[in-house]
Amino acid sequence: MQLNLTRPLLFFDIESTGLNIATDRIVEISAVKVHPGGEKEIKTRRINPTIPISPEAKAVHGISDEDVKDCPKFKEIAKSLAKWMEGCDIAGYNSLKFDIPLLAEEFLRAGVDFDFRKHLLIDVQNIFHKMEQRTLSAAYRFYCDKELENAHTAEADTLATYEILMAQLDRYPDTLKNDVEMLSRFSNKNRFADYAGRIVLNENNEAIFNFGKHKGKKVLDVLAVEPSYYSWMQNGDFTLDTKRVMTNLYLQLRNKQGKG
Image (cartoon, rainbow, N blue to C red):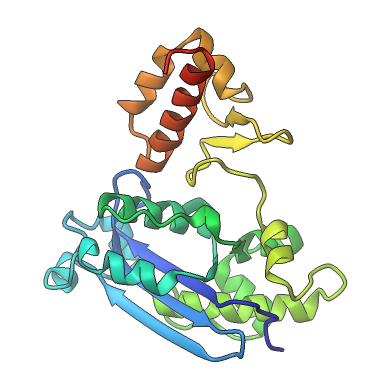
């Protein structure tokens, strides 16, 4: 089967120094750009994260500080990477919860404003979990009838994710359409206002807190009676993207109140 594409679909995976989106960094990124005609481009780069790789992360992906000490820093490749990703829809495995938020943070730190919200996003893991409830290696075995060699290397995981999506389309023809927009809707569990999922949108496109003591409440309603919550979040351990979304909402409230 060939994917039904109207523009390129970029599959990507990253390996990192750890699992904290706000503070950890990318050490390897691999991407497969699938063009509408079926042609594929593969790019893989290791990156000097400028901070130590945690022992837990090294145990998973096998990349050490020594391995990346002479590699380029993310800010050195950020503009060219963003340009290469322009005009693509984007797919990954667990990408909505981790890879996209972390890559968005790296772009913001590098001063490159790459807006993932302008792209259709497919999370192959969410499709898998809705259908079968398994892990990546199990998904690869289940859908592709192969063992995943070199698991937890960015390129192997990226290529496996691409193959799994193709197999999912073959396996579920009555549920899944060979259409990027449909796959994007199907694989998005929630509509996030920020990449980290701290703020979600309700059916009326109103921003709702998705964590903490105000979970389920409208952001503007909370800020109207507790404006200090905005300051607390700006000074807290939240991602740059979450803080930017909060700032936009805070300014929206102040303009509504005539205090702009």
